Image 1: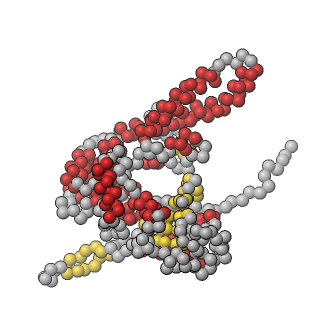
Image 2: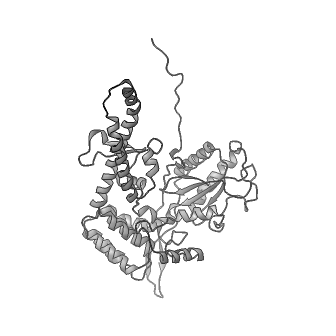
Image 3: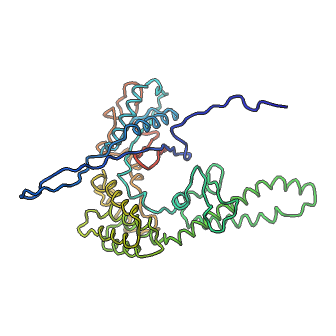
Length: 436
């Protein structure tokens, strides 16, 4: 008998996707116009020197339009009509904020949602304000899998793992369906190893019970009821033991513990002599990959670009001598141009704020519990200030009303405070939807 199993099939386009239960991903494409050449005279002579002068970064019109559409689609999906703040030091962030506001103003009927006592807030940031964080090796489970193995739509390709079995060439890591992954995805690598051991021991305890002789109907019934759970646990154990084993192999193969320690030194301390010595030592280590070597030099370039004893040309020569490809060598200057001191709106390495200086001093007195996790992203500090209501209007102004108590004509803004915050870093970082 032919039965109609479905009634209607529809295809819906979406400008964003749910990356995690608190994260939304919006693919942002960016275009940066290169610097032009201008002529300027130097000294008292008549000599003219041609130099490259940065005139600013600009959106590609098509990508700006597409990004605006994606962001407004996300706001409509979440039924939010937010106040808008942007990073003042970033012209692209301001441009995107203006475009989103224009759409909300034009389509005010679509954004006429039920007002809340505390309105949502859209905060648009520029990734170039902190180019340090993406260059550092991470040591939590999810981050390590992303960095070393890669995750695409919750799938991890393990086909290149030596001696991998056919059924484990591709595994799924999803917090929605994998309890162990959900509980351990933000733990550091040392804790993961201990928890994997506990998982194995739990599995071994259950295994004999599941394989008892089936001598009665009750035994058979119990086996049938427990077998799916046992099979699922067996798959979980095999999957995570394989993933953690491969991560451990790559950490040793690429000498990542030592590399990460020097990365943290470059990001968190200001001892130029020690940093330079350690970077040069690692550049001579054959176990360090081209990418890791280039990233160490990138971190050095960002931190010590204006140091009186800057040795970047020498490090670039070391990269070339060790056979690092031109592609990676060019990235060093590209990263320095992208996230250098001239571009940044904040000082990543020498905090001027009294509270930040005090925290740094106290941290130095207490010592470091984990040398591989000393660095705290600028985004964490920004969010902390935002939640406490201390984010400076002079650095992150509102687009539209001058004060939180002003109401935007058309129903978008209401009372002070922050109920929810949408963060849109301009450039390669994804879109974050952070609940208070």
